[in-house]
Image (spheres, rainbow, N blue to C red):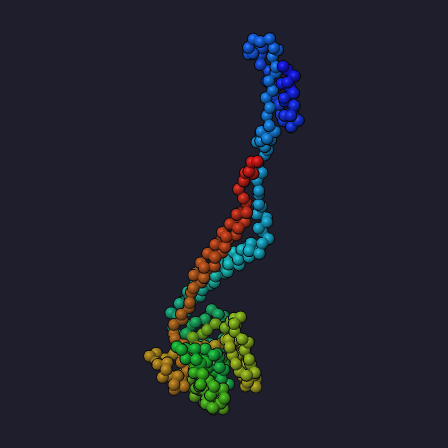
Length: 327
């Protein structure tokens, strides 16, 4: 009986398998005249493969942040926080400068008007910015038209004239604001500028002017270059105006680069004065806009937000470990 049992297992033995032979003790078989036959237990190869796969290490897909570092979006996000942070710090410095300037203006405005010395020390002039002064003398030509600008919605120019002081040097005086129509007539010599005759010379009268010393102007990137040949002044170049006034007189007089803004008369109507051709002076107060704190807050908040976006872009590429599906 042993031969048929083994021959029946021949087809199964031709397939790959893992065999495990379990031999029972003799006592487990019933008493019989036949000899005990070993029992063969067969396991398929798929079960062994599955047990082998259980020991295979898990695979993870890992993305490094270096792959996101050179993307255009990442490069922009790197530049934006740096630029906005620089602008925020610059606005903080401007805020400090503006606060110091406001304190200086307030101190000088509280002082009574003073008489300018005969010879003005130009090196000490910045310490007297926005200080009220009193000057006496005669207006001279040629007129300088500084603008165009607007005042209370009216377009026009500021009329600046050389002023020969009776007890000192010649300086520049900003007589005030005039309309564009009046400025064009003065430029074309169809009308005389206040304090001058039709030929551009002095009218011979002596004037007392209460004014305010101002700072030198600064050209911004939006201001065009002054055209000296055509007497067009787009930004307040005090030194250039003084040099031009000297050359216009044939070099006969020396003009110091000092500019005094005439103060307006109290209780005067702007519209009435401009219709009469009288220049409108500046107010005795100084209003300085101070919005640097708001600008600094905007730039610094943009810098912080874009820096947060940059951190998110660089860290989101680090993927969590993922399990490889079992077979």
